Length: 107
Image 1 (cartoon, rainbow, N blue to C red):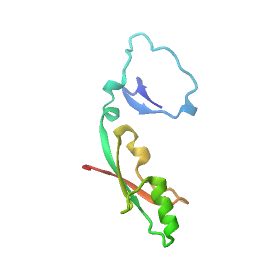
Image 2: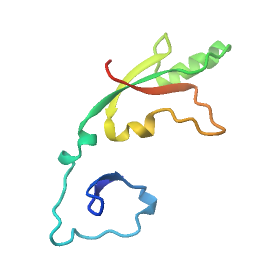
Image 3: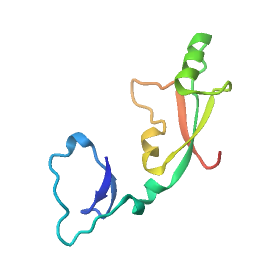
Image 4: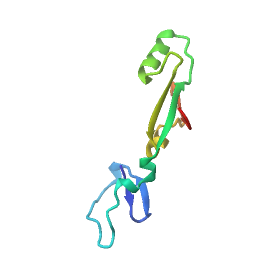
């Protein structure tokens, strides 16, 4: 969940399962809407492309269908800056994604 953190005076991302209590805005604090969240109102381009080149043509076709890649194994999308870090490829031990997602400046 993305919301304004009054204790940090900035927009932050919160894990919903960790929210244990909610309350009304305290006196003296004003409502801060999404129009002031610069990361939410800016967009970035992302390139998705094949990371692996499987020998099995059916596997390659499946990867292209799963990620809606073109015949060259690529796709461009535009997403909000606030969610980019959740999408960009970040290798985790034990998992190898079949595609690479990277931020690009221009389409």
